[in-house]
Image (cartoon, rainbow, N blue to C red):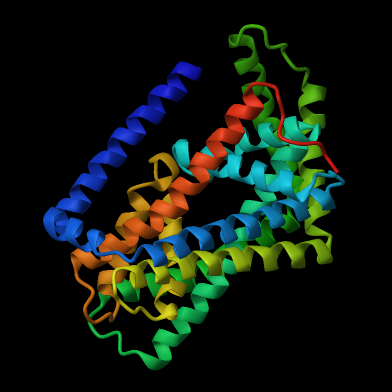
Length: 348
């Protein structure tokens, strides 16, 4: 099973390399390298600093959710665990969907808590992170609708339409799911019980769980989600921290353009960063390649005088280079540290 996961990751990175090759060819290799060579390193350093601000903000959101669930974990430890979570997302296909099980394992190891509670915590954080992204994107979309003539920018029009659609559809689905959570829980138990027992039969040294044990664990997951959703103070703090993290990412994109001598309105970043993040669900490790491509398409479609292919790709390379590689390197160290059994800190 581990060999299959490794093969899937290797194929994913090979596909990512192919996507980047096409993207760089589209921008023009020589012009792209020349643009990157002129980058102001002071602004590049600011991009790195703001990226750390994003990690700090979202790790606060994780720490808040864990606190609501009764898990006492130091904020510094939460920061390292979140870095490990981001590493897991960045090296597994389908982004957060692929990395959440690994993240739940990290939390359970560090915080000495049950796996299903850890999975509920990271699932809650990922869900909460979606709300501010769409809210902020709607603000940017509202600016475009009222102040900018979109004209023939079909890609940008489609992006704005996607934001509005997501702002309606996703909250509606969450509301309906919450209203029917007990019925949904029963269906999940019925569907997963035979699957989990079949997998346990095939994996050596793994005890076959009883149906009662599986039901107890799935119930524990849903109860943990319910505790988070019914805590207004915790929700407000987690959402605020998430919003700060998104703003840090958007500021990082603006600073990346400043690094290559181009001034870009913040309202542009308000729209393109959250939309591009959706490309993280592609079967590429962490969405690498897909997110960059969507960013470049949207930036070229936006009313940005002076932004050509090489300019857009160069700014995206600086921005995504920080957002992708800073947590990947830091989180990789954390995962390796936990994997040795040494741990990264004590709860409290």
